[in-house]
Length: 257
Image (cartoon, rainbow, N blue to C red):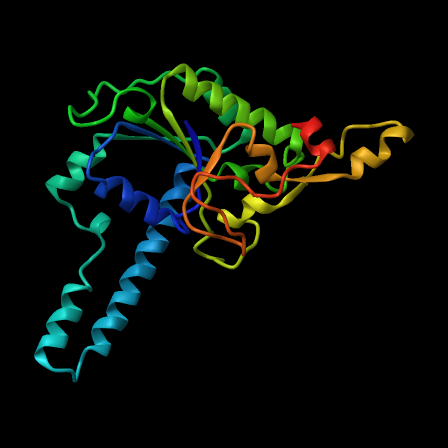
């Protein structure tokens, strides 16, 4: 199965979920950025988390003992900041791969081979749900490039789906907000509802096809060919987990997809 997961606003939430899941699954996490940029983002989120916890602790001063103890228990350092045997064990199930460009991402997925030597837990499911492939910020990588189109995104998504199918893995796509600019509309789960042109601006079309060249289509419509959505609501859209937008695509959109 292939899913778009919209329940994570920030990278730290995804990483925390991967380490806390009841049944640790072998996971390949493809990060669509450089290693340095990814680590900087994680550290920035940890700093913000710790700052919020300090404010919470300071606010507990002057309260009665029970309230203070309760506040202190909720202000422990983040799980990723606390070296532990549990975290060390969880890290063995997750392999990080960094793809800082669209070309690198497509090339890696084209030759993708699952290399995890870890067995699927005996209590875990078999088949595609037993191992997972997560791609982080695929849309953000495409945004602002000539590939941020129906044509470009379809090519990348098709390669990703093929890679997951070939290796019998569950495929999850995750878009997270930029911690340095959380309100940026060009990052995070809301980006799935952006409209993109059909073709790159560099593609020359005849006068008769000019109207097609100016048309746009929702990224979610493009992804609906291969993916279903799971997670919370975003961007004012209301979707039931496991479903795509309720409005049926127009005849022209259906022909494009």
